[in-house]
Length: 374
View 1 (spheres, one colour):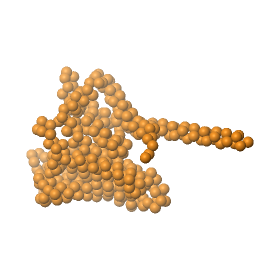
View 2 (cartoon, one colour):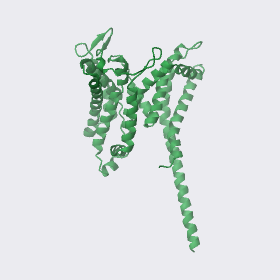
View 3 (tube, one colour):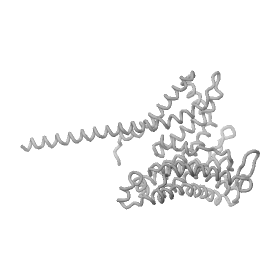
View 4 (cartoon, one colour):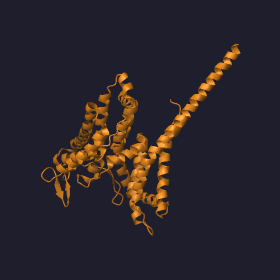
């Protein structure tokens, strides 16, 4: 059994805690500068989050954020920046909605088919960037940003009325999916709402992520390639194959991100489907330090800020703009970068001091042995 490494745990926790505290302090400075009470918004949001219906909204939103952040984290562990999760998720959700509206299989077949469509679409879209990187050396950052824009235009085209689009009011949709593709959730009553059934898929994906990365040869090869492609190649790992595989897996997980909402509530894809999920996933992956548990807490935090912030608009006697929560999210990203680097430098200094002390102790021990021998 491994010995508990208190310092390692401290280093792992210090970064997110410092980032969160710094974001709160900086947000408070913004509030003070605008003449507002720096503590009241947090009280109002916590009060809002105490309601059961809001808690359900937070859990549902967090499940989507969690899957998107896992997709980003897989890339990060390979030293790849898959900034195209947003395009991969939206295109996969749209194609899944189209399949669900045009296929009428029994439920035990319909839902697996829809999952495969989502995973396949996301993987193919991310795989384009992977192929460009391993064959032409194109940066995955540039490629995925461009693919985001292409995905937006492609979705706009495919949802035209003469392709797969179905107009509902002023909105273009893909039509309502057959009920055999609706994934049941946990109904907590009319006043509370329903927890998406695919929340449990997010949990399973987190467990699978940890097992694959930490308990399999593939996970070791992936992490080794991310740390050093040259060293990995020297040990027999095909770095290009690992890069392409990582992008495919990242895109496949990204494709699942929209399914909790699609199969659990919306049952159609429309132009009002949430955007920006992939970019929020980057924030969550950074804050959670690519750890499945850390990402879970970060996803709940960001979902809390999203779903509790509307209470600020209706506060009396003084209303607070809900954009305060958006400011805080942005400051978290900024604080994460600074705090993690500060913690890393502190950890290196601690390690250097410990190695120096151990070396000095060993030299002193050898010197004393020589004196005894003399």
